[in-house]
Image (cartoon, rainbow, N blue to C red):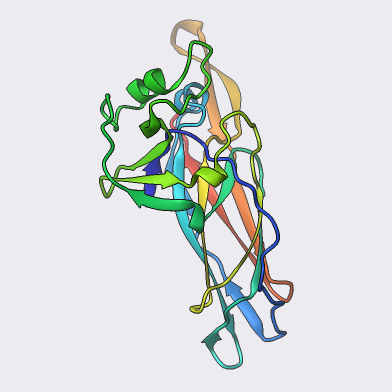
Length: 219
């Protein structure tokens, strides 16, 4: 799932009730590496308008080859610009009466920011997310949103369900970029940019894994 995000949800992540430590025979499987189209212009000009990715982490018993439920999983995002959103914070909502085209990032930014470029949640649809693939809207639960805070969660502790799966979302707002000056035609210097990948690691104590989100550089 790839969602064009209108606003970054701010989360309050605490202890997980009912989670248990993994047994020695437990192993986990993390998602495969992901790649997103990205550009330096988009990276600089569209703060808090990024991509939300739905991901799963699977925990199972390697001896019995069975899923393990209620296992505590620790997730850490290594690098700025990517944030963790627990699955229970996201719900499907009906089509809002938006005053602009929901696929037009520029129009959304104009409608949902004030004169200082700060996000505003009035009108209400500004705080919703448009899934460009399914054509549906998703909403982050109000208890997870705080538009006046710059809190950027890169750490999450959750537990697996009865299928041995921990569901969560990753919000990708920006990638770290560095520029390199190159000689252009006619002697004019140009600057090309490359982006750094973000690594997400997961651990159940007795086993761990990691995957990355990488941008496709277009300079």
